[in-house]
Image 1 (cartoon, one colour):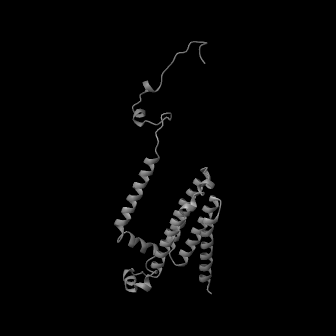
Image 2: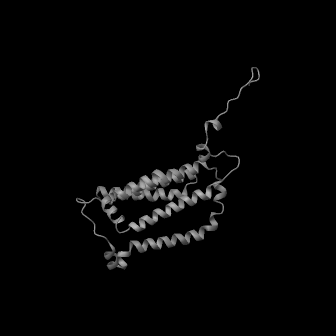
Image 3: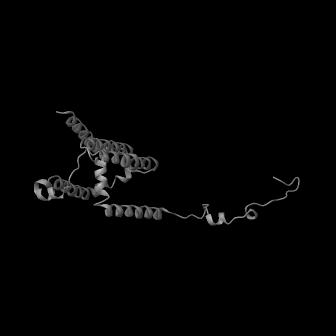
Length: 204
């Protein structure tokens, strides 16, 4: 067994074990920490396959941003998880059905070369030589040439989702002071301050 195969089995075993602990841990904070460990091991598997860009994106985006946000939200919100998990068994059949559908899709993707070898071979793009073109540059070439419109559409979808989240969570309250930019700009020295003459012995 080579060193690369040894690290592959190590990362794969840790990823599977930590993924199981995500759903088995009783403490939600521990579940988030196990999910971060799963992402780290998945990044190690990406590095072994030569996809260093995907590994860095997984660490920077998911571990560095999304999972840290989840961790702070879980730690800051006072949620009764016992009451929340009480009705989880009612949705177990639906969850099992969705899991079976996802498993079937994964089997079809993995075994696609066996079922339709001509389609799988024709749909693959040529891989450039690593000595002349890095993986990150080759991925950028494909992303910003063949799939540039899909990339722009995904950006618009994320922008709409962000604006929708802000609009849905925005609440105007009467007892909160807000900044009025136009009123502040229109102020003059006469309206901004006033001189009050206080007689002797009548001040605060």
